[in-house]
Amino acid sequence: MVTVEQKPAPAPPLPVARRRRGMKVTRGYRVFQAVNAVVLTVVVIVTLYPFVNVVARSFSQEAYIRAGQVNLVPRGFNLSTYKLVMADDMFWANYRNTVFYTVVATAVAIVLTTCYAYVLSKKHLRGRSALVGVAVFTMFFSGGLIPNYILVTSLGLKNSVWAIALPNAISVFNLLVMKAFFESMPVELEEAAAVDGLDTYRILWRIVLPLSKAMIATMVLFYAVAFWNSWFSAFLYMDQSDLFPVTVYLRNLIAGATGAGSVGAADADLQTAANIQAVTIVLTVVPILLVYPFVQRYFVSGVMLGAVKG
Image (cartoon, rainbow, N blue to C red; front, side):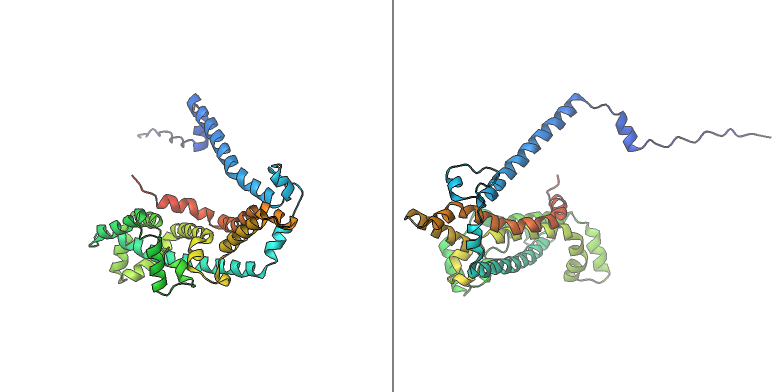
């Protein structure tokens, strides 16, 4: 009878956590962690301090602001400027215009940027380099303010949302980021879809776009912030006050209050002139701050997916 010696079963590998406990942490790594923590803390403080200061100034009285006594906490709690701005019906009309302009312009920009980037991602496309060159050329050169104004006016786009949406529909930076993302997608997915009988448009709609949710959410954030904060296009192409976005309304309010204060207006006007800039920033930034947390989880992954990979 032949006996076969049984070898003991190999021990299972140690969990990652246990193996990491046994790793020796070098002094250089500790220094890196400390420096990294200090740098990030300083960046957070430098980023938050101006905004907190602006919020404190918006709720402070004019005398404390002029004396330079407002830092991070409001002094002489004051809501008169907020009441003055928010009691105006024109403010809410212009605010609705801002929401409408942002939604329409962002939708147009996303559609055009996605289509253009998807086309440029196809390396077999004839004239691809010329199309890329045309896009990159516009990053450094433009027709100028007067030719753009003549073009928009001659096309009959003045006093309409298209005067804001169409001239700024494609950001070349966003276009190149989205192009890099589409190029990183496996070609086999589209080839398999083409074998199944899908044409180019249905491949884009049913295959590519569902896999690009993070990138599209990132581009929506970029475009929405840009259009929300934009005021010069509306200031240039809008002639009627009821068509202004809220940024132009607040810009005119700042100019009017500052001018009134310079010629010796009443105390209420002087108080408004002193902190109206802070109120303007708060009213403009708060909506974007409320939207940003809902798309933040897509932001990092979208930027990383569309980054240039070496």
